[in-house]
Length: 58
Image (spheres, rainbow, N blue to C red):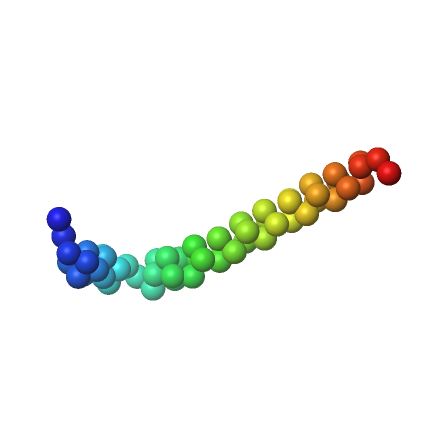
């Protein structure tokens, strides 16, 4: 089993092979994608909750 340091070195070695655009996708793109997904989920949940409230009998 590899140590933490060995695993980090392997990861770093692979990252250094990437060009700037690929690095940007890994460093920033995925994070932004996750934020956008969370916003879409929040919006969908809000719409659903509002629909339930609108249909709730008084």
